[in-house]
Amino acid sequence: MKKDFLSYGAIASLMSGSGASVFGFFENRREADLALSKLGNRARWATVTTFLKKM
Image (cartoon, rainbow, N blue to C red):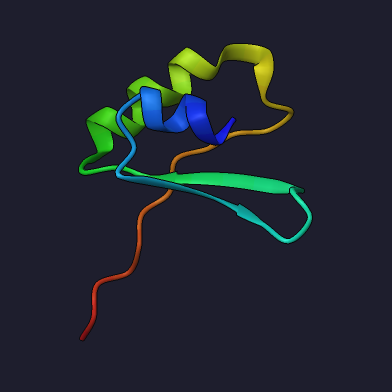
């Protein structure tokens, strides 16, 4: 799945722990949403989130 994220335009893709979660970092929301649509039902659960801005 990491390779998939990278092929969908992620800047980086990482796996947490023993692989229970895989995530990617994208330049913008549009690219992340497009990657989410390409995943389809291959992922058990998937969502797009944003980081909080520093204050």
